[in-house]
Length: 155
Ligand code: ZN
Image 1 (cartoon, helix red, strand yellow):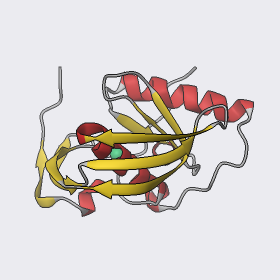
Image 2: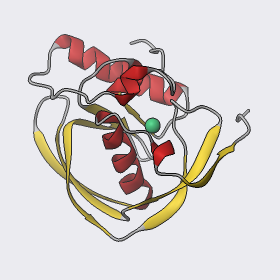
Image 3: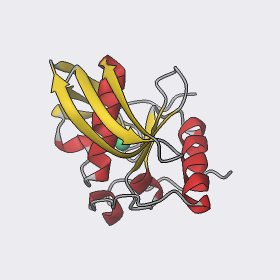
């Protein structure tokens, strides 16, 4: 496993649409392992493959309840609304208020290419929306209501 370099805003790869994963190879598995390690290293709630420079539809999330891996995730249902502060490892030192659905249902494949369906609310719903946006080359900064604020670096 290895910690990968996280691309930051201004890097053109963050604005590109990621490609579907056709099969899970050894390289894909090590990418997923590295993404998890990188997310934990930087205390992120989620990480999408384009953030480490790989244009593949892979997302990892951990809202404090254990790691979740999503390959080719598709949000199939949303409901409700929540407005809260959001940040991104690709936009270090910043945060802003973003409105997201309060509930999402997502279909995806796991690291063994087994299909699964998952429902999330609140922070998990927010994280799924945020990370899936990365796969379409979108950053949360375009959704921020009001100003993007500076946040102090955590000790
Ligand atoms: Zn992000």
